Length: 465
Picture 1 (tube, rainbow, N blue to C red):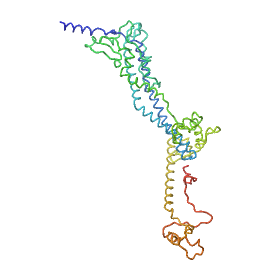
Picture 2 (cartoon, rainbow, N blue to C red; picture 1 turned 30 degrees about the vertical axis):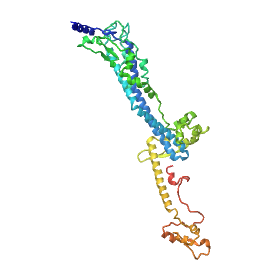
Picture 3 (tube, rainbow, N blue to C red; picture 1 turned 90 degrees about the vertical axis):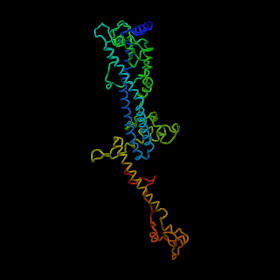
Picture 4 (tube, rainbow, N blue to C red; picture 1 turned 45 degrees about the vertical axis):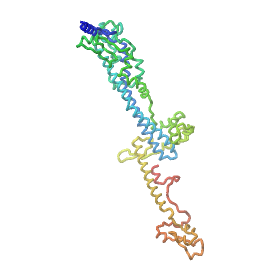
């Protein structure tokens, strides 16, 4: 008997509305609107990512092009080697920064944006369903979303607040998705509307409407629930339930950093003369080069000896000459660039595109390699002959007959009466012993044609400068 009473009591209990819920009572408009406000921010994630990727791509291309003229400048303008190297390093640093940023977006941040889009779709989908469960008869006030005490005037809220959109046409708008959980999501403890119209058919007592439903129906991963007895409920309050829900974990954890990374500016090194002039224009703009010239000089990053005057000296900038010697010299450097099939044109470096600059740099490197090979051969020949060169003067300096006869190119001349001429060069002996002979010259000295570090360039070197 007791068991039967307990069974009946339990069955009656399951059919009663849950505490704080009312069968068929609508969702508060303020709660629905708060989710839609958040959704509108989250759904712009793809537009924000596309905009950021475009900025990084632009920075990478600029850095690639910006470095090339100055790499060529190091070859063509050795007197401005420090200036050219400084701008090369500056462009390469911008390239490295863009690559590093790209790697960052290959990880958690892109996943966070994916979660934001997923959340937005979930919210929009739920609100679309709730909106459609509404009477179209004015004054009826029957529906699943309602104002407290007044269910009218909400028929278009979804269109203005939370309608499904083609996110591919949205403009970027960076929002703090972590902070928005506190500013946008409603802090209501009871999500149900007190409109006086309990007519929502979506949350009509599931236990009696279906076959003995014994679990709550979760909406938005359980942030909102339809209890077995009907109505809407949430744990604690809507905001707390949202922040604690796994659907929003990534946005709560990574949302603040996501905003920082989206708003971080990229470095676009100058690729034309105007940009270079602006970079060198003022002491403030030139500060961007302080780290790179410090790196070029192999100084500690906090070295105090690198000042604005250091930078001005490297680029030959003066109060009267804002463009400076380096930029003037760089403007005058030209390279023969392919234009159409079979045709070439001598073009200023700063007027060329990246592919043309790469081709010019390849040609210059090839020319340097050719000269290097030639110099290596000359050096090797000189080294082999070093110590074997014989001359009249060399033989005359020998003082002992035995030492003279022991050399590869000298003989003792017994018939010579003048002591200084006793030891003579013997060309036949030198040739037999494989010694090259330097013949006496009149009115000049013997020279070896060799372009060293301190010599002016030879004609072969001039071909690439």
